[in-house]
Image (cartoon, rainbow, N blue to C red):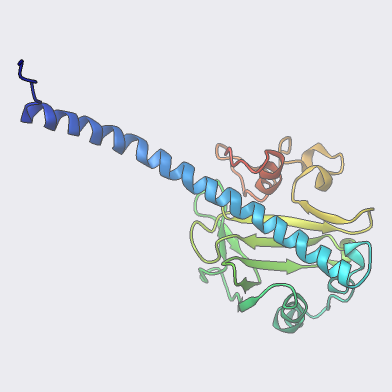
Length: 233
């Protein structure tokens, strides 16, 4: 019977070395792709959560328009009262709020949001409400512009990267139209026919969603939703 030839030690080491090199080249890309998939799903969950909250409030209050709900129509003018009492009490009926944080200045790491593509630049938000699922949110209503409220969600709380378009997403509530709904910043509804307010055609750096141009990244919410929740940037 003919003997089967085994690999020599040198051949085995060379094979293992090649496998190691290939793994080292492909693993970072695989990890990055996996992380994007996780963020995509969390962003989708955040939008579903926000929509569900407002629709449930409207249903409970027997109104057909989310802009007629008490959460919006009775929104206080006093900012301090909003995050200390009003929002925790109002939203607390629908989601479990585990805490809040008032932001002091740009040195407060819990409040700093980095731009998508503009070095390490960023800005802070006024406050955050923490919810049990690990997300944190910032909700504000602007009476001066027809309740173009803003809904900002950091889908993984204080965890990195704390960057617009990656784990921080931006929606609006536009009242005055029928039906009122939650719309992404820099999307079709937000632009309302103005190409310079649409993420894909805008010249405004703060509405762009780009990793090759200077971009704040807040417009990435619209890009992500329009692209069936695939983070292709």
